[in-house]
Length: 296
Image (cartoon, rainbow, N blue to C red; front, top):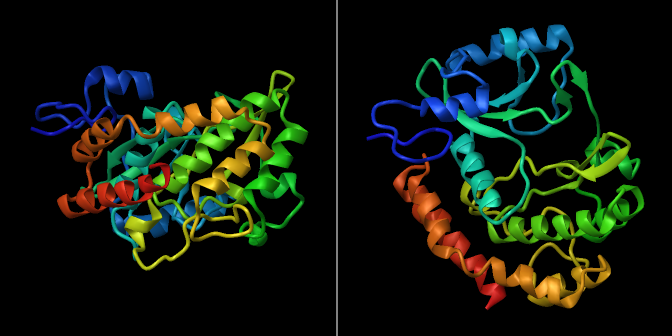
């Protein structure tokens, strides 16, 4: 019995529950036909010809498909790092488990049966394009300097630009802590953005969440930017200091710490229901348990 690609619950012989498909796509069937591994180069060439740009290291392209034109980004399998789509989709689900707002996402299959990660674009609302800026842009830094910064710096940028900084700084703190706990050492300046809509500026829902330590076990860094002037050997006191600098009350901070310690059984359930291979599931949970020690 297979699990649904959207909710990870048993779906019989189908890849999607019809109701899940309706929720994500607005229709009871998956309306996307994706190429197999041999077809991505052609798809990329078509995107380049149309000058549609989506930045990032992981292969990603805007989805051009009939009624869904430009509404989604798809990420196929990486030629050197296997199972990145499965990894990202699971990590995004875990973020939702802990109350972190994320972009809409799901897994779909390509023509060759490989998994492809599909994410709804947040800079689009139907035919309307929304103004979205990442923290490289807010800091007036070029994209190739995306690792030149700190989480304290992002906090200052959000405090300066967001309409409701207290709310967004709390959300930001939760996201940084979650990234640490899920072995994500690649949360750089371009992985945090703000959205301009209806005369407000807010921290955008999270995106590009991956367990990097699962993909690259040799990575010795624990964070993508510095926290208290370092990226490794992170301690709980570093997060305490970050919360203080973000203006988060101690009681709120401790509540956030607590919420990440009481759902281990549900984390395990999501990981075990995911589309990772068995050994990757074991390693994912091992990384989670290792990183959790900072809160004990």
